[in-house]
Length: 323
Image (cartoon, one colour):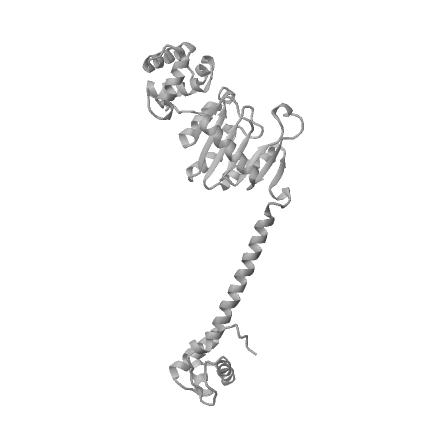
């Protein structure tokens, strides 16, 4: 017996179209125009009759398909609606119990510097929209200059926002690496200290080391891989609150004018680096740093460095308006 929820097989549809063109046909007629054996033609005509698409033989005539197949379509629609209701119920049950799932589904523990480094590379290679970084001094698994995944990600349109701990800017080679990233499109800011090390990709997955800095060197580095959860939401809020308070780090071009160089100097000064460190990073003398700061104080109309920092913020000098 044919399945009453099935419409037409391809060979049945073809036979019905031929019958419509013929207006009426015997088994031999259909076998001839369809180029099939008479036994097969007889079987097809009987199937069409059983589905209400043809009259009984020996001369078969086509019947309207909307009448014959209307009930089948209605049953299919009812079956589909029933399936949708079941799906909606299952989805609601899943959502209701999702928060009660084992923490193993939300947090994965990663052990070892190599494994942690690979996860940091993976989340950058698969990121589509944004990477957020808390970069503390003395990196555990990956230094900025070793992060070869950032530039390709920036090139394909991934936004990078990084906050660097002040002490990191004073480490050999780190500022140059940061400036390279800024030149490629990274948005960089700095704060005196950061609460944790953190990397977040597309607001959907985060990596956060679990071992306090004071315990580094004791055993393998350990980190948590955190997926969508209230914990991840808290880490996102933590990043945004620090981003709002952080000081922008600006880039000085290779053949920069004096004003561009001073803007970079100013950003390092506002970040809290001492004159000696600024001079080392800019590869100028300490006296040159002091002289340029004095010039900026004159431009700002102040006679103290505290006043310079205040005026730099008030006049938005670190947001693109040159002094």
